[in-house]
Image (cartoon, rainbow over all chains, first blue to last red; front, side, top):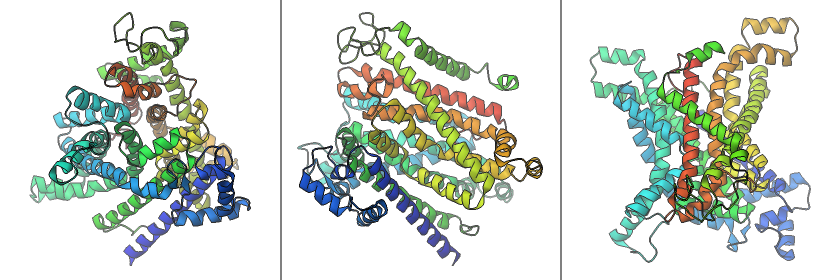
Length: 325
Length: 280
């Protein structure tokens, strides 16, 4: 029952945030230069008059603002973002087409960064002041200070230009193998550099967080009790301590999903990766505000979903969840 | 202040190096118009001259502009954004956090929901949308960075206020009939300042990185030379002239690294017992 109320509360909150993002989007369309109709048409100034008139009636742009907002929210509720002028088809179609590419690199980088970060952070916490601790701190500080785009370019320079080991552009080789193992290998080779770039940055974050959280947990009384009881070292570390230390890391992971998607814009731009980030980049170049705002809305939606998953994980990891709420 | 200076690790090599790097960046920013009176856009040599060739320390870019000159002028943008786009969200976050923490109840709820909204949306994405819509300029970039970076300050200040507002000295001030503004500004805020000052150093670094990324994408101020713009504009010639994009990127990296190390030292000096660092 408590768990049910907790989940319900989180769902309501998530819906409110989505609603707020939608309203923010609506306001941004009004702030954008030019007639809102041309913004929604996704073309700066050269839309034809009949199309604009149709958009005005579709979106009720001659109605008072609250009515307009109502119509806009109705359209968003069914994920109707209007048309893309460049591609001459609905923005929503393009987004669905691009979404898997973005999820492919962000999810892979996320899993790798989390695994490596937690491992590095744990090693550092256990050997406080030791070699691993110094390595972990140095790696964290360095990659935390490195512009993502610069890491990407350096990796291209080393692994693609100098060594010629890995492709630096696109998701597959043009005219390359189309099926079977060679095709899979081709896909994987294209995945390496973009994912590595994104991973290095987030690894730094998770390593630092894990170290801090583990140091704190290892000093707690229940760890001393476990030691006194003669529980094995590994069991203490990975069962007793990590389970408690993992909560702040899970929270951070949820919060960072937005940054991961933001990072995808840079990564996809550098590596010509055909996802939402590259779509956003091209929308910026072409001043296609409508597509840009749609990508903003969808990425925000993904963050909200990720946070719901984090809330669910909390319930699994920590049975006390919801007791205080 | 003097006590703080005494606690800084002045013999630590990393600390000294960081301080030196930051001083160099400040010196570059201040001296740019005197060292390179022709400005950063002036074509001074052959395109893509290698570093250390023909009297160009760092080489030239795709149309023959001096990279060193670009880096000198770029330092101005990075520092300006680093300072202003930290000060603005800092003030905004303090205001929101102070009001929320001091008044509590409905005000607190409303302001915290707003804070959560801005923490949820992808920051860089929102910043890009804002700069694109407000048209790219140094002003719109600063506004965009400010809009995405105030929430952590607000949360931190709110937390401090929630603790401090029930302390005796605050209650005494309330009983003496002083106004809310006076109590917030003169009683609570000075006591809440310690932890939030440390956050500022991290915000400077983040602001510089955000500006570089925005300019890299091509939304920089078209009238100002910026490190991110230099990298973005030259990435297509990475295969033939690596130095054109590597050098300005190195400038961003070293500056941000130096600021992070200094922030770390400041944190240890101000909050000696916090071993967790500033990135928590």
